[in-house]
Image (cartoon, rainbow, N blue to C red):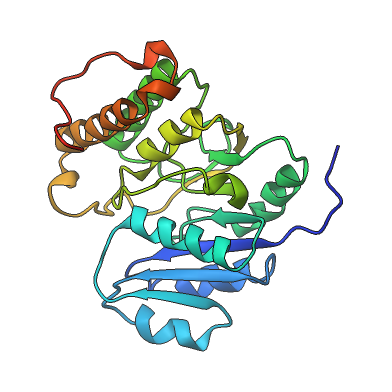
Length: 255
């Protein structure tokens, strides 16, 4: 049954040096939503000059602070301003704004707290496939998350998500980088949030996009994701299924 009460929804879009895409993406997003927040994570290209000309709210980081930090700021903004849901999406034309109404409709069913897009739940795709190392790491980490947390995800890393703001208040999110989903999934399970996936199109336009620094090395990236996952499970061990508490290489020290 759909919830017929008014629902305020914010679209939150982290950007970093997206001058190639930002105008086209935001023009499309504004066809489906009025309330749009862009988190500019220290861009050094013309994105900085473009955003003030557009009918969107902007949070500006003076320096690059990371994808996870941008999402934390978006969640805090949504909570402070009384939104019911915040939908996050990327600004590189790999998430289709036309899918926004489906996320909103699913949110109105009132049966989930996190609605996560899955690029692998449908055979529909556009452009090149993601590089082999990214596909492999996504599959590996998704499988490990499912095994350790009792989930049934098909795409642990998709950034196209809808989040119930009331439920986000239960989380203590501090991971600033690309390992942010590791922390989100662990805490969502620990806090008994209801999770649902919906299919979104797999669109991959730029196989050369960089994570920056050491994370461009697939082996380092995989170890990093595993460590953040393990340490977050260790932090929330008393609220997680027993099967979550399997050992991995390395301890967490004071984390």
